[in-house]
Length: 362
Image 1 (cartoon, rainbow, N blue to C red):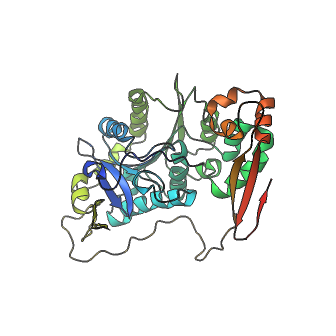
Image 2 (tube, rainbow, N blue to C red):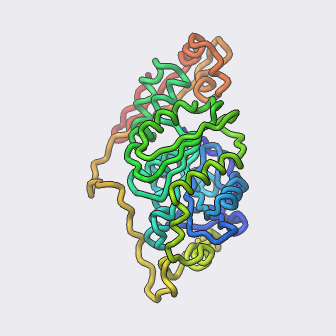
């Protein structure tokens, strides 16, 4: 499910000072060239990290006139020593939102959330439990069921889907709970996640807009036309009118509140004082713990749910394509349904149930 690339940077270089910590989560911060009170939390795709998409983020910040806070996931970039998981991504994005809302004092209507591909999962999850100014989703998936059936066929879907229901996101369930304006962007020629996923989600949005990007696949975007659509969406929903809030300039927030992520003798520096974005001077009181953001009404001590992990073990096949090829390589989709079934027969599914000591193969 998670495919982190080789890190493009580490915590020592700090992306030339642009890497900061928000609620102990490393983030790449791109400030708007023109003063702006709008912050966009960016949740990147799977096979990348915040360093690899820096130029794209700078273009977005410049053309949209927003400040961007790109969240780094566990297992990616400078966090490559951690294990990626759905919970890890959700918690990281929530911590950043919580920090901006409660520690910095930024109004929710001035915070946008953008998620691309796998980043649509934590982005939609956050927006379904809170109400940011807007939610922008790019190349998103509707559900694990649809994604797996498209890749390996209906018969395998029943087996593999049960695993991801426990460990993965279901945007179909989350999107109907989102109250803020939603923009869906999807390449019309996307072979990894077909645009039908976005179409299905669009019909569940309370306040949604969808735009199909012509001659565009899952990557290799021409961003300027896309930014034009995004800008029109933000204007139509009066997002930029939220600048009426009296806020400290974002560059001052970065300089005085948000901690740079720099290792010195293996200790990461932390801010000594905190203040709200609308304050005119720094308070003398010490930091307090960041309050949590409402995620609905969870129980105070919810029972632990059993989880299920799946391990795909390859065995030789006679058709020249392995089962993992069929699952991961888009080109393998050109195989006939019969050959895909043959490839999948060469795999063993190893199930491990957490909360018990048993493992079984299927």
